[in-house]
Image (cartoon, rainbow, N blue to C red; front, side):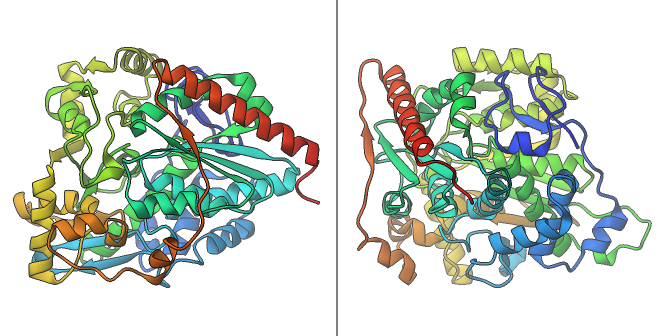
Length: 488
């Protein structure tokens, strides 16, 4: 299994190299040069596997045993997923009228990011220990990724984590998961801007190959293919549990499952499209909030950022730069790196690109979309509670809105992806007129001391933030180097 860049300038990298990278050196995103095929026989063999075992099967398709032997892989995944609050790791809530909600939020930070983040950090730690070296993670977050990266990495002696979050644009629980972590290897910055603003200086830092190499700089956003790879598993799990494939005779065509995903950076949708290309019969629906760039791209070809990011009740998907769409475009255009390079560089420089109509039609054939405003979110939360006594988080409500407003296709089962617990979004729950008992772990966050640094807005804020973060990263690197080796 070898990996290449979506922009065509890098080929032949192995999983370990990709794991320790952010963007590819040519500015693109890493993808497998070829995708394994999921046959109906394979899917039938996997039916009934516990989620942890399924993750091992999926990861083994992309990680050669020369890099991580199968026995080690099983231990790493089992350890990564051992701290989830439900024994089955993920759970399906089967509600009225065919409403099936795939709960992916039972990890430490109550968000789906924990599933892939914990595994990815275990893979990193495995190689760092083996090679007696260190690395530095740089993460920009719209709310959930940062907390998950911190909680998965805290205390690891070979890994420093630098997280930048948009002050005032996330919930108190999301913020507390980051700023209450006081371990020496955790460094948190609160920026006066949006998550898309944060991405701009971070992209420039990752483009500095001298900095990347000298500091072992890497990403734990879903830029990192390992994150997307692990997310393939929950699409397969949903399919095995909800498609009704066991009712189809061997040799017959497998049934389709519609999976509806609340979408921001499009990492989950990219994972769904990858696994669809591998042969899983999925119908994908990307639901967005008022930050509707993915919806506009699919329906009109208008792949352009709005002037400002709109703050909504679903802040983790308040994103105007759905960077994982680059992976979708690459697959859609038959792995045509030069075409993707032209498209994405135009988007990065001008913040807009118009999809040719033939490309837009191709995209609309593999991805349906819809957009939901805040009132629609609240309406969905109230209705789901009234009919099922089940509280949705506002992001999950963005997906479930589709259940109430778009009739089922005959004979196709549906799954709605629940990306976070309502415990993280208490203000939205209260605005919907609902109540939700907060877990003890969330209540305890309020009593913890905090630590973070500010990135203030200035006339030349992007350059200022880039310089400030570069200086900080280099200073941390000097301190770590002076302390010597990390593993003995």
